[in-house]
Length: 218
Image (cartoon, rainbow, N blue to C red; front, side, top):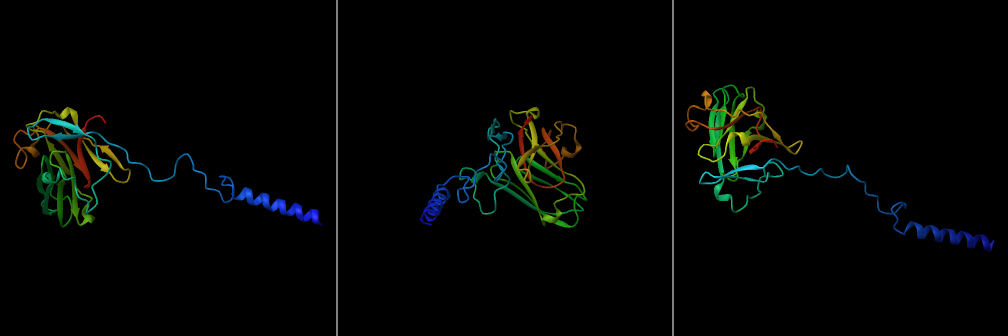
């Protein structure tokens, strides 16, 4: 009887040591960490973005890793003086033409129903990234394509090096868009607010998002 009790005591002690030894396979040990598939997916980088300096020279900067900054997030102090915001109340049956820095927006008649407040904004007018939005958000799906153009007049770059990209917030990636790179005979860019003899790239939009003029071929 005494021997049976001793065996039971030793068995209980052995179990306790195993349970609290910290092994990953034990019932109370830390869960094993898998090799992939868990957690938030990381942002994917995008194409380098065109920078147009005040003297017309150009360079490239790394693409940001995400979409527009949330409301209340302040821009970098160095770019705050170069922020540009343009807001216009637009009758969807009439359309409108707007400009923000080197970006030009053409909203054709019938693009959306009713009236909406359209905003074009650039955190830094020298960095070719433009956020487009419309309020109310229910209007952000157009019946007719809206056209976004970028002017490179009076710069040392060429349209061959450029494309327009939009930021897909669902896929968290920059998406290359089909662009018209010869605007020399385009009647849509022949009048104000477009510059005379406009040189640049243009694309069609079915909704508003964040857009960049980035290095072609990314």
